[in-house]
Length: 237
Image 1 (cartoon, rainbow, N blue to C red):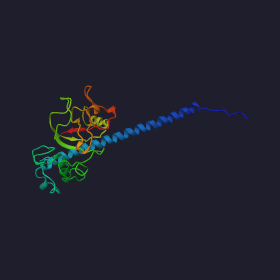
Image 2: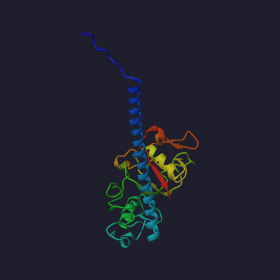
Image 3: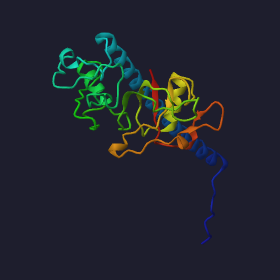
Image 4: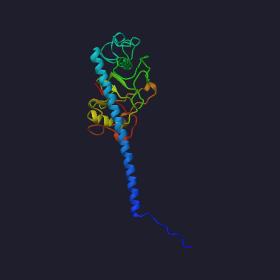
């Protein structure tokens, strides 16, 4: 019996396989692009929502959330909470021993400016019941401080301002795209800055400037190609 001849793939068959592989790779890359875009939009929506709530509260009560000295009598359903000291700054620990950067979410939620209900417990309790979480399940922060980077110093700023921290555990490519869409793309200037904020008391690892931003070029940029998954930003008010 004569041996059977072995037939290889024809050029047409190889071409079809290559086309299929190309389509699959294109679909995967497009899918990843869509996921990234959705995450960017989600984070921007969160940023815009907190900013609107901050200014809305200020407009209604002529005071800052967290710092409001008459919150327990004027904010609906907030009688069991705490008052701020009314000095015009949302502080980490005010003269009354209250952490206004946690209390701020209590005031905003009871006043109806943000979704959900957050209740202040004490000066150190930060969890999903006291503080909103970002899409990567890290706590956010609204505070008066200088824990963000500056072009002037090349590191942490020396000028305290009210700002909203996105929280950590955010991929650097997401923050780079957010900065490009709503600011100048530079993590040291404008309203969107790199911030090393994280709830380290809760065991979180703070973002590192060395892996999140690139200051060896001018202007500085987010290190979007590094693949770093633990970065954070501050939105200056």
